[in-house]
Image 1: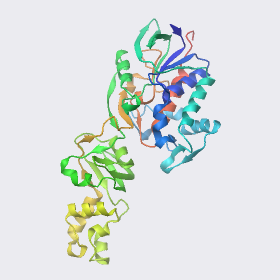
Image 2 (image 1 turned 120 degrees about the vertical axis):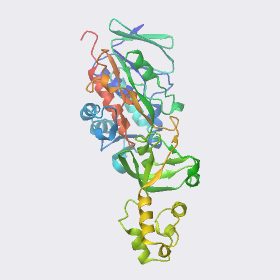
Image 3 (image 1 turned 135 degrees about the vertical axis):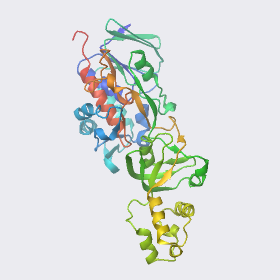
Image 4 (image 1 turned 90 degrees about the vertical axis):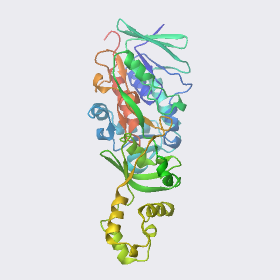
Length: 392
């Protein structure tokens, strides 16, 4: 049985950050993972360039049963703090839209940076073996990893959620949490494409068509692109809305978010022989389908009242998804280890001293665009700062 100050389960972003921070504070840390290589989700993120943070990070851009929980960690370890590390390692980066920061080169640079930080802290990383029995007695945790055993007074759960199972993701964090008496907020896919039922087949036939919209689900609204797929709806606006969508609810789309009131009747006065499809300023195939659904042809042959109704529907078009494409296509999950059992400052379970949960394993889920990585860095940093020596 090898002895450490902390055992970190999961060699993803949150786990590597926690190990690096604790190690550089003089703690002896071991990171255990069943995967053959560290940081697999980092490597595929952002099209292989890793959208590693967002300049507009703020607590109101995260979903949680406790919307205040993320404030402490995000406030103490900011996007600027992580960017400082990126620049210290000489990693070139650029900003895309909406504050999203990406590597100029490969996401591999972020993984190498985190591994370098772990090396600076002397952290041991053991990969490619199945996780076995986890025990807890006399203030110490024991973990079997393959044919080896490890013991430490601190255990950090950083195994993520079940999204993208082809990358090895599982729900093991929830099983471990329940074993230690912590509740789990039922997880569901988030940042995920939505599927449409058979009566919306006409829209599924638009597969590949994208256009800027405002998508609304619940009280949330997102102004980005929507994409029609052979199964339903996707694109950034839809992925964002999906985190707030619940089965049985509608998703509302504004196809002309920049249009002013009365724009169709004004168009009628200016070009009475133009058709609605010609007037919509949308991709031609989409414009034709919308006009057909609305039953509006030539503007001059349509009453002002009918045009006003068409305007209203185009600004609040209701889709009724019958589901999502599930964890296989979800970037993250909403839900996870309940925050009411954790300290928002240290990520430690109040009733199980030495037990920490970080990253996607916790019931904190960010918007699309680097927010979830920033939560991984911030929560991992918070736990790494808090881990004590056995004698402390």
